[in-house]
Image 1: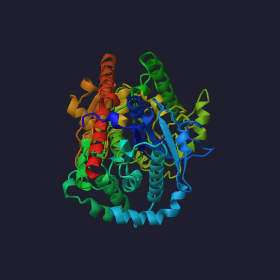
Image 2 (image 1 turned 60 degrees about the vertical axis):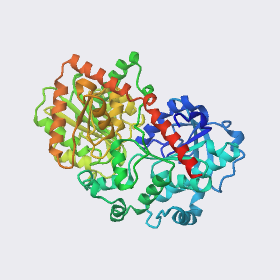
Image 3 (image 1 turned 180 degrees about the vertical axis):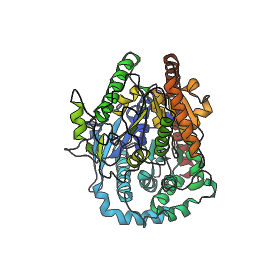
Image 4 (image 1 turned 90 degrees about the horizontal axis):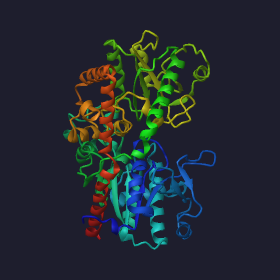
Length: 549
């Protein structure tokens, strides 16, 4: 089936991160939505968890009292399951359903027993967020089935797409209760692969020797792993986001993905050319101003500002490498002052009151502990904070390299920057994402989209994509892809230090050319180019559904 878009009457995509900004999957869905909407219109419906309240509403959801109301009023939902419908406030403004799933807990035991009987999903060893994820997933499945019936849509023309293990039980429920619906399952990172890396075990040198089921038992991951594996094997189409994760899935889940669906980006998030210079100037003023208020040091306008960001996974995201590289860079005594930010949300205790005072003062003095913008509940245990102090970054007027840790979400209301991550991104001169475990790598793609040269690794899906499509150098594409293995940590540290030293010494014309090359790379990774892989997945799902029914 070459193109099955005409066959689709409803396309549901379910994720814990719909209208709920937690990590990279939010970026996948929110940036993909506009292209999907252009292709399928309001046939596309995103389903997310209703974890919000009147006191704490989702900033990304605009509720509607009329949208889909005729069909919703006819839906028969389980007790304790409710739906709010509206628009997701992102480019394209697709329809979103937020599902309240509290009622699912009452039938948890019987549901888990059924999942064991049908698919051998082992829920006996469940702990942590397993019950919550499964309750939401089952509620989402109930909403999909009820809405298809109420709207009198032919189930044979419905695609139900589920993202990550947190929604896997929804896929299995739909397959059992409405098998005419074609299902797609996407793992953005295998739960067991992430756990192997998070526990400090080498993944890549020994990948072929690992057994996913055995490692799940060893790392107490039986329930999540067995659920994810069941969805992988029972979906009509199983996809993942990069060749890196495809290899991982083939070994640890015993299933090669049917389609690899690389993640694109929506350039609507980037300031238009006429506003870019002003956006960069505002971002730099904020980045330099906060550093001044924290350290008491005057940072010149030509200070080279570099950052890393992403999920708070110290080893997986290469935060350890980044900090050690900044220490190695300091030893090289760069001619231009370097300001290195760590923009990684952790267990944040709120903005520092003394820093807020200094930001409002005309002549701010140097604060104690001038490396931290927000308080930490686990100050002594936080690995980033501990390593910064261990490496001895003084952040004083003699420091050629200063490191500042921002352990909060940059959502525009953090109390110090009060600008979003995307608003600050244009102010950077470079970014570093030295990932050890990175299924795709949105952060480096976002960076080049904003014209900021980036350093990533060969273990990131985006890094592999760059290597396959470009000469992976700053001058060619704005990206340096460093080879990373289980055994070359020091080499990676040294290479990053050399890269930043080089970039900080570049003349203005060279830096401008590298920024242009970065933007050109991002233009080749738009959703308008990558949505074809999802079209292929939907067609494959229909074909597999037809074969089994």
